Amino acid sequence: MGFNKRYIRKEMILENVTNIPYVSRLVKADALIMDTWSDNFFKNFDFKWKKYQELRVKLNDDVKFWSMHGPTLEHENYPKLKSLSNVLLNLKTDPSWVDILLTHDILKEMDMEFVEKQNPPQEISGRFDKLVPWHIKLIEGYYGH
Image (cartoon, rainbow, N blue to C red):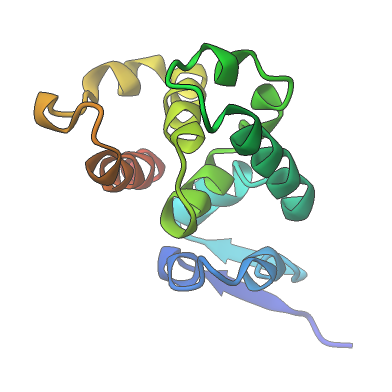
């Protein structure tokens, strides 16, 4: 058998956000050579993607008619979804308010100083269609800093 090494770059992940099995298989090699962004992505990725998605769907279904965040934050599934890379993929493919809330909570736990420097502009506050791309850039920026 040969020695299997793989080079992983940010673009390989971001170009395949809808193909989670491919993203998961990227790390199956004898040796990995990754850029910093990809290394950060995989350190924060829950490889039990299907179970993660089941918990997320249940949470979204349970809180879809609530306008306040309390029921979301107190839901039994919320603490089980704190995988920033999974949140990023969901923001890119099937965003929800849960993903926006998770982004802030996860980043606060990881790097409070980074989060304190990042505040969405007032004009996008409460606007889901504007907050989603802003949060995608926030996570991508965090992985690159």
